[in-house]
Amino acid sequence: QVQLVESGGGLVQAGGSLRLSCAASGGTFTSYAMGWFRQAPGKEREVVAAISWRGVNTLYADSVEGRFTISRDNAKNTVYLQMNSLKPEDTAVYYCAAVRSYGIRRNDNEYDYWGQGIQVTVSS
View 1: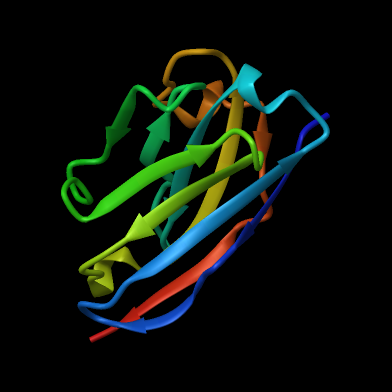
View 2 (view 1 turned 90 degrees about the horizontal axis):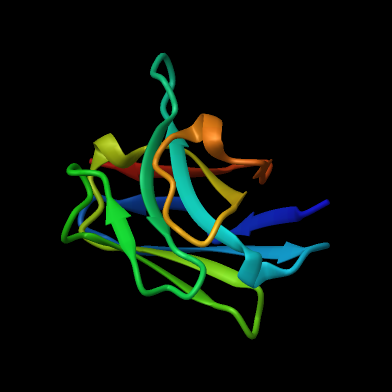
């Protein structure tokens, strides 16, 4: 059983930056591809970014491409989401997720484990 704990969320002004972290425990971290998802009020959960087990392959939602960067440190069992040039429409609860796979997964129904979520609010 893998446990995921997100940190680093909060309130930031438009144009600012935040870095989310997700610490994993209870499993072999390198056996899992990782993803960040978000859900805004009244909207469906959507993928933000995902990364393969070694960090070689990544994918991004079109809405965050060029502004967000996903990375992982397998020695620390942690995945990160660096968010720059934040916009009010980035406001959402952000979730870290893990799937037992070496390759990237885009769909939330493919993921096995989820963090509790963390709020990111971007003010205009």
